[in-house]
Image (spheres, rainbow, N blue to C red):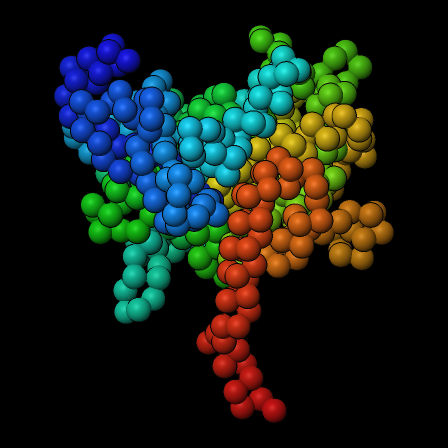
Length: 440
Ligand code: GLU
Ligand code: MG
């Protein structure tokens, strides 16, 4: 404890940013002077519980207080706030780990793996938009970002290099190993990849990435957006998870001599992820806007690259699960996903697949984006829920995923997300007025 304070002090830190994540995947927290580090590590920084989305805590009594207890090794100076170090907090209430804190939810899931001697590693790949609002319309921050197929566009990448370099440098200074930065397939869309890590560290990294990107974009007069689908005719933002399981130095998903890409355990895990796909959709596509991404159909660039069908296939980016040697890519999550909850739900699905020895079925090698819907149905390939409301129904009906989230968090998730879906359903859009106002 003393060492940590000394280390931070000699790095010029005078203040801690004690950060936690709410149900919606938004970073929250408060500033605490460094000399109170001991309190942060033992009791935690205190917050009014009901003021945080998803806690379901009462307004009075001992359980009204939510404490974010700092996880020492996560403390890092953050270059975009000189003199400040971010420390990630775990939720505690009344002296006990708080069951509905997303980081505690993930801790529980990882503990279930640890009982079997396993560690999960994830590589989370955020796609995002850099936008601005002009004449009451949202568009790319860069007006000249207009190619029909904008993937890997170097010209626009170059125009945003100040922001992208600063972002990569800031993440690097916080200990993330940035692997690549590119222009994605929509106007104003980019992707930053950093090295895979232990699943908890990856979720913490993702939250750090969002904090850095918001601040650095705002300083340049642009808006950093993790909205899943800002533009109807262009691809949305996914947040794919590369997933591998480890037993010390041994990859549990590594194929044996008779396997193709994944071990038998890996295939069972994937089968669990497919079997629970509908319930997982609520967690990994958690906004009404998410469902504009998860549809079948073309985009301006030719394809959306977002999954709509419950299938898996070797290096198949048109399926929900893309299998690779010793790991798989879970392509369902979008950029609005809470990384802690998504990882925890994924673990529950995978473990169920292993425990019930589920079979994922044959590899899908077809381009599902091209396959006629009739043929998809004939093959028995299910479509993902197409609305937030139906995904919530699937989650509520799924005891495996609800148990992983815990009773408070699953009830709060369903309550908030159903309210969001209802609010949206009641909204009368410009599209409806244009289409119907004088049509009948
Ligand atoms: N933007 C696509 C999505 O929404 C993914 C593109 C890619 O494969 O990188 O999932
Ligand atoms: Mg991408």
